[in-house]
Length: 301
Image: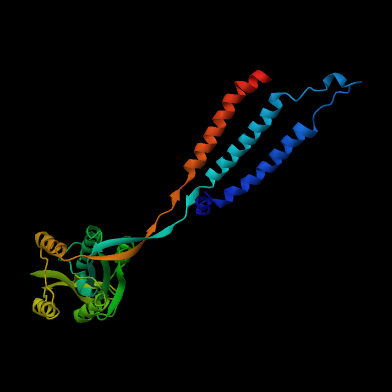
């Protein structure tokens, strides 16, 4: 019980000051019951000897204390008691994956709607949603490369990072070699048994106009698949290109067949509202008070 209370915090701690308001209520009751009672003067009190105080005198004080306690519980409820947030150690089996995302101006090409970059961000977010137990990181590259997010199982945080990607954040260019090198650097020390790096005509940006706007024109789309395939073979991997949804699903299936690795990670637990126990106790006390005031105490008065 002590440990449970130690783990409780309050979302509205200012409401706890209302507990001080119960002090004058208690003081008023004490004055009214024990000090401010009227007195009857008798010439002799011999005939009252042996006569004790009526039961109602004791019951009314007990139930006043219970009502006061019930109102204290209602104030605690208004303060919104919550269990503390904590980090829990969990063990999962998965694959280490680093996504290398191009953020060069070419990613503003409109062969995908609304452009390549936004389409890539949406696809990356969906990919993350489907990889429940995999550790995933992200590298962005243009004329230089930068680690946006290291390998992590915290997918919501990763998706927030993905949503903030935009063109122009790095030096201009398309240094895919630097992007791949940075991705390899992020994943090479991983102890996972399986590791993955995911990196016609189209309306593409060809010049930057005053004000930072891009001028578009139709140019050929060129992907150096030969170099990418050679890099994959030299590093003992495989190169895949997803040209449509069907091919993408085949790639996902290939990744799913890779050997999984068990690893420990920490998961943050959300705060939990803990008002129910206080509300139940207050309700029971007030119900008992109502029943006794209208039955036992009513017959004694």
